[in-house]
Length: 82
Length: 82
Image (cartoon, rainbow over the protein chains, first blue to last red):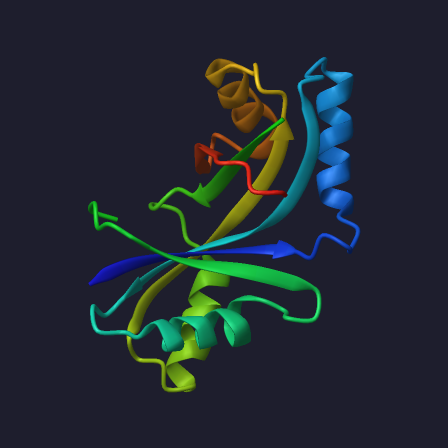
């Protein structure tokens, strides 16, 4: 068993109202040290050890992200008792 | 300016119907190499260089996550032209 994390974020040219709302709330609360917030999705997968990078890429593209408006990164992480 | 990523995931003892739905879809499509999927949120922040770890932890706890049902990790990432 291996652990994989996939982060899906909205493309930078597309507006992110959720991120903007959080940034506004941070400013009102005095956290002026934050200048940008973007919200995306985070997936944690448990997969067979022999799954290929191409398989993982296909899973991210077709099941986890919307390639029209989102980009993603796939990251294998060391097992640490998920 | 520094970049920070925060991943927010539902606590393992709490059901994750979105993750289960994706796992089911993967199985029906023949991706039997995936045995678990959990969906969470991913935040990308741009912050001042001098922001403290304690500030970031407070921001994650109070603005990005719901501590009752979620856990989170804060990660400073090398700047690479966000």
